Length: 111
Image (cartoon, rainbow, N blue to C red; front, side):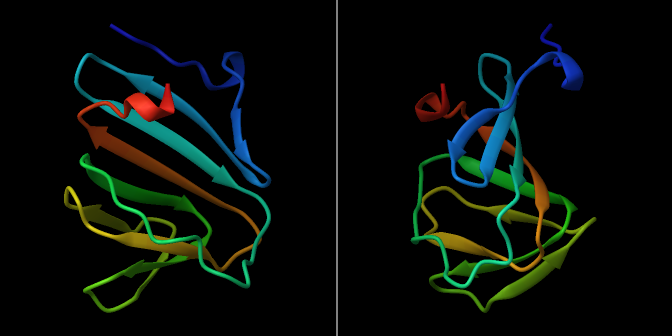
């Protein structure tokens, strides 16, 4: 069994204004991502990955852009799912935001 005590595990800086913590089993990874440089003027680049992903917006507001879907505005408490291979990106609308993103299988590129 894995455990993550929030105050005992430091964030890992991904890039300016984006940091994360993660916990995982052999096949499942959950990532807590904090954003702190919003609102953004530009979108992040579109990307995709082979992992199935669900996202929970715990704080703040974002817009989710998928190449073949209409845009969605999400706020705290909202959730969405991204199938494997789907091209998407986000734009931070609030000053800060927090997402919780489970991935299956584990994202080796995050380790």
